[in-house]
Image 1 (cartoon, rainbow, N blue to C red):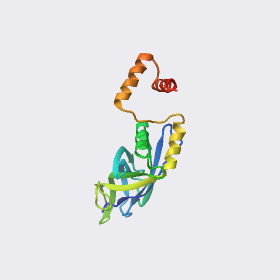
Image 2 (tube, rainbow, N blue to C red):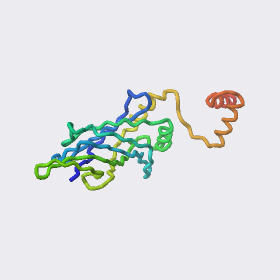
Image 3 (tube, one colour):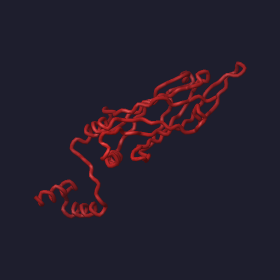
Length: 197
């Protein structure tokens, strides 16, 4: 009987990465230790859960650290790094601007494909499965990151930048001035503010 399951998940900033990155530490469990897992692929869709909605922000896949000579008899930890692009950080800022004291809540929807072994009549057999130990093909888990850790992550990488939302019409007007005057967006906005003093 397939026994793969997902246990606890810890999410934390990865300050050693070149761009803003989260590190998910995922506990992978074999609930049928007498049927060791010898090969496996774990994939996950990551959602930001806020204001009663789950917003998809990306996906990752990872090979389980097992092999024929190193099967998973009971438990292992998988560490997956998940990068946050500027657009993702901007969107998170927009959704969380009124939730200053709350954690970032991530919903992770896992799928799996793996091979496990079992013995019958003294003979070893191998089988392939795409189900978890509860019989489902998808497993949902929740992981939280304190918002102060996320802000520190952003301030580490974007020390002199902030994001604002503007309408498409305003952006097109700014772009027109950029092309006409040969300045950057930042310079155009700063000049307009100085002129109005």
